[in-house]
Length: 71
Figure 1 (cartoon, rainbow, N blue to C red):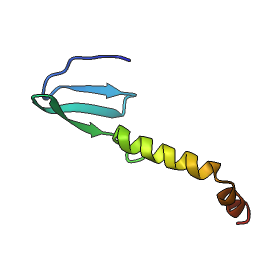
Figure 2: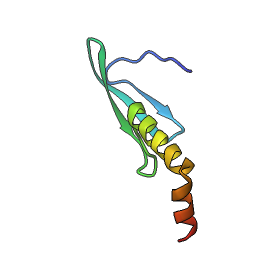
Figure 3: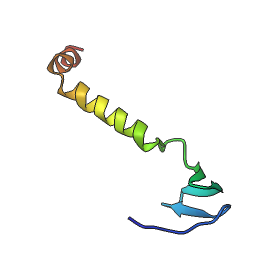
């Protein structure tokens, strides 16, 4: 993991087309802004984990797989 120090108003650029800007720092909370192409999905980690778990559960359900094969 790369760890960087940034102040409010400063940014980092990822892969030439994603910019993460520190908008505000209040105590132990940091507000960030993310500029990225619309084709790049951006999720909070807890939401991403839920989506991943639900997809894994659906993929492991044999009855769902049989229904998909029947389409």
